[in-house]
Length: 363
Image (cartoon, rainbow, N blue to C red; front, side, top):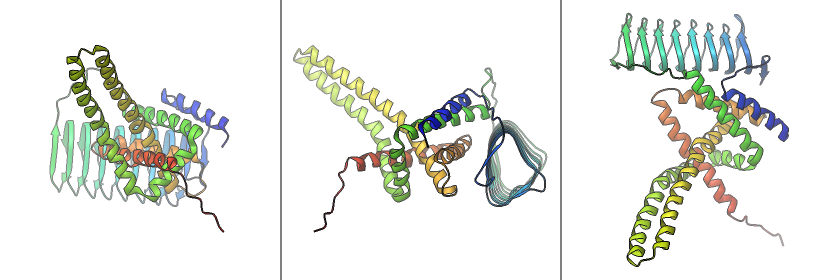
């Protein structure tokens, strides 16, 4: 793709980071399985074979999806039957259809009137479950109301929690008396801002260092275990390096202080402070940007059809990571996995880039 194309996409992502979702018209890719737009509708009677990915302001899914449904939007309603899992991040969500698999959701308001075959894992301001749930319900919410039937356990925490339905498993919900003095951004706006910021930075990385990003993705495909070890070592190094530098610096400063070499002591202190600054900057760059961009590109490359444009694969992968990051408890596990694998992949490919290739000369 030409560099001008990346610049235009980066401008769009920057606008999104300010909270402005304004697609001029619905656009479809991958034979209609990936759709962007202001208003997206899957009409009643329409059937999508396989998975479906939707990104828009107002999304309505009245048709059936045989596979998984991934939705990222402002207002989302699902009235059709979902044959797989439902992964969703939105301001307002209303489900009147049925989901055969699991629901993973981050939303400002989540209302589930249809039946769910397996588990529900949700982080939301308001949660209402009126349908039948075949598995567990795990949540973190401001207000939670279970009005349907839950075959499994109900676990979580809420500011207000009521049950008018029936729970067959264990019920363990912590009630927290929380007063919100300052209005916080909605879950949707926080997720949208993170998605847009990462997309902007990811596009810049693809523009300036596409080959390095491709090598990082290749490292995840070829040696995931090794890249995870590199990433774990990196996390350990973020703690050990500053501590060792501080300890050595203090000992040297004491020694040269006794010798009356104040200038040398000043240089040592400056070096210790510089090591802390560099560690924080490098750590932030890898953990907050390079690692998630690498894993997002890998997800898009692995799960979307071959030949999908790189920027579309990156956008789809980032959307999945952002939605998962909105879910309590799961977000910590996702962050850890993304950091050690994505960060390790980036660091390992830098090492290979410095290793000279062996050239075989045929005689």
